[in-house]
Length: 493
Image (cartoon, rainbow, N blue to C red; front, side):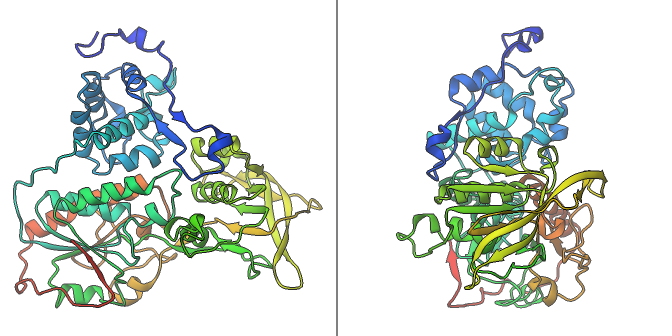
């Protein structure tokens, strides 16, 4: 028996995993309020007792950013919720975000010792609980920065990689400026993830906490156009640059009819809804046409976000069209479950081959072909193979394609000497260093599309490498020059 946990290990295994309190599916499918309310204090404390407090906590090894999970759960047992979230923030400065969107079931919870024979400890839900407790009770305090360093670092992109890199370097005492191309901070966290999964007030709060570290944020600034990376090193006087501009350029399937009115990329669709608030039209001047029948192509989290959003925008029939089985879907199990509860119709083992249009080039249907699974492909999943003479048509008015994305090429094309991969990604080593000295990169820009937590890991690794770079290399630069004045840029202090 632990001094902190009143239950013997054998007793802990009998405690059922605690589930989040959620909006009923019948209500939430018609609103954009957060689906899950998380654990209340009682459920969180019960869940914390399930932790076996392993001497070798493999859960930390399974966490991409290395959170000391055992210690923060022990703090919950002591009712020290602020201490728990502070322990998390030592490794992850965005706990309220990560507790909501990180796929813990594939990482820390996947290797949980308890999970070998019982449901794993709900680590993600506990992380969210302590982060929300701190927020709701106004208990956040800015970490003390012991040393102020002379290095001046530019962070390009304010998604999870950029925000994490900025926070880690700011805690080390560096002078940090984030440059964001859009008018609002957050990158994919803002334009890609719907309000019902990640409320904007949470993202805004986490952003304010990074600014509280002394980080400056400049929006409406397109690096590669407003200023180049070489200009950052020149007249701007930066000593290092981290690139975290994501992968916002959509892929398409290349099937007939994709140019029709009523066909969206998931990127455009979600950006119009999430960033430009089309779901609040006409309060916000961003109309979006969905129609009564919508088909979303894809099986990842982006596809799931798009189809659940379409349902909330009034679609009577919302189809999720995926060419493999549910087992192969890369979306989170929780999101698939929520989609099923909300009435999303899954057309599995189905591949679109043509989009049908009327005389005015508006979508009226989509021709599909049934599939069967063959041998595994490069991804390790079984390759979908078409079944001859199995074509059929579904009547839809809107088609949304969520079949992958690639980085925007602006920075790559304006930064000489930067090694670029086949799909437009910026090539990095394990420390996120690029082929150009002083330039680091991470997140979807170097991966081509991944999870929020992996982007955060890249940002954290890059921060460590930048610190090492600036600590071991003597920089010969002039005094910091004043910021270039551009009337189209918004400066956020």
